[in-house]
Image 1: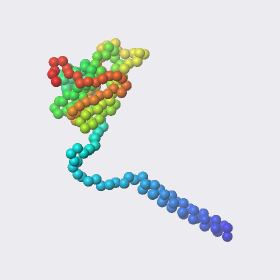
Image 2: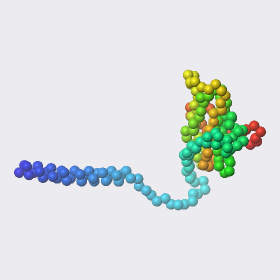
Image 3: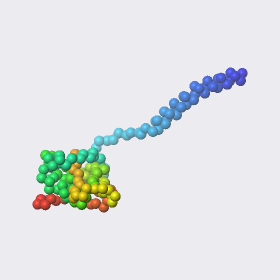
Image 4: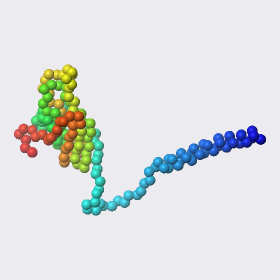
Length: 177
């Protein structure tokens, strides 16, 4: 009698345990799914908060020889200046970012973050400076980058993440704003 009861108990456990696991798993999945509500498609009222649209952008560098071909004298006039400049050529928008005159090689900059915040371009850059122990070219350099943008920003903010460098809009000599 004890053997029969034990066998029945084992069979019931083998059948019931997987069933409970499935039921618990389904309940857990249902709990994790977000509920959705239908949003009405209505025009915002005047003065009503509409939210902010921020789009992360891909960083598209243009190499110096291509920049020279595409931007021509605009590039030639600014490639030695510290700061930034937006240049539009044939409806394409380019952003120049430069560190200005450096007395040695070993300097560079990398754009680590680029975003469009409702027409304002926000960029974060890391500036690389040579260490005292680095062997560098003993020549004057003008480290810079040119990026191709997917829109024409109305304002530009560039922030160095690791130095005190400030990037203001540059105006080449002989060019009026």
